[in-house]
Image (cartoon, rainbow, N blue to C red; front, side, top):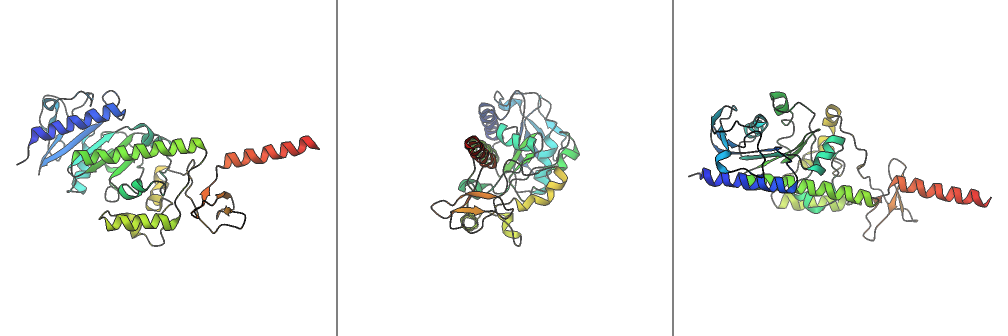
Length: 299
């Protein structure tokens, strides 16, 4: 028998985490949990997720009609229901605005892969939807091309949505993604991001499959597993283009230790384990400029 009061308390606990993590400012975000064939508990509109009580929550049917609750249901519940209809095993959906992951959606920058083992295992490629005004059917439909290929999705110029069998797991994917996006930004600020080699990345995908996690990269023939190949076709419709984080390309290192990428640019010297890492091109240009200026000053 489903303990609906316990589920409501769990929703309030996750709402508190969202608020304290800075993922849901003011009354941002919404959470749902499916508790029956035609019943979904959802957070109400215009309430801080950090200060909810079980009696604040409401219940809707799978068409979005409110069945009970003293507060009005969230206007974005249709997005949650669209996910649940597509994937019946999904019982909970969490939508919020984590700053670092949302920044990738605002910049329309693909989240690069082949950087952290935990992200490769638990998340994989992350899609970015096309933008639609929140709340309506068009907004809900933006998730449908990706819902079977990912458990967390970035909504262009909006936030994130993640989902799983219970509310805590649904929340986990958002927390992992935002932490990852923050690490990427910090590494980029330090100068560069070092990527796995393709054999290293493939080993992680093999481990992922062994542990029972599915990854759509395994379904693509001749997939460049570090180049966001899964969602590349969707970029044409969503305006997503790699800019700050270019997908890596690996070739054999030259005797000088400098790796030449397929586009002719130079990457960083190979590391001690044989992995090559793309260099920060702005730093390279600055170094060349400094040397030219120094040579001119001596002439």
